[in-house]
Length: 222
Image (tube, rainbow, N blue to C red; front, side):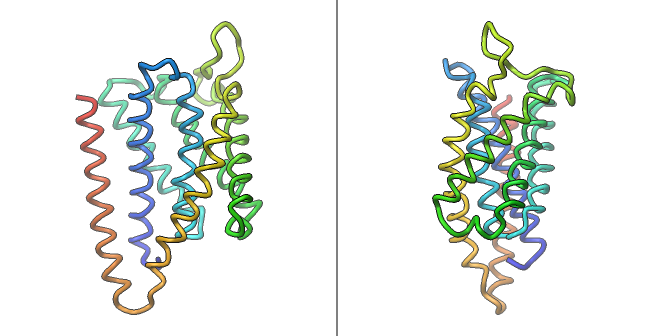
């Protein structure tokens, strides 16, 4: 995909889907006995979006577009809930989002093109991505002033206690994201005028998707 506008909207769309995942998973898990692993699940599931976008654009820097988008959605969601930015349900998740993107960038910087070679290597990459993210997250208190959630009766962060959940889900999701991105990218290897037509349709679709997700979050919070 060589159309810059198309790439921007692709990663805005990825950020919007990421935001919807954050909202829906948090809402559905809140009243369950497994709510304490929500953060670990999100860490693992999120890498699917990163891998998908990276596999298409071949440039991880574009993930910052998705990061800015999901943060904007998070602040929008917080405004709907009348929560301040310094609240633990706002500042800490935003910190986690930043850490997750940085963890993926570290993995890409180490492996580069090797990430496209074998699914087994992709799965191992997912494990290390999650490990980096969960190890860094407990430092959130130094950035937001709000300590991370801990296991009941202890001072041990949930992110470390259930790191195995994040690593397992990441090991599954990273290969899926990379392979899905590779499939989609084949449709944008065309050099003639049909590429422009496809990009226009893609942009319109992604604009519509982002708007729908924005409205969906509004309706969820009403």
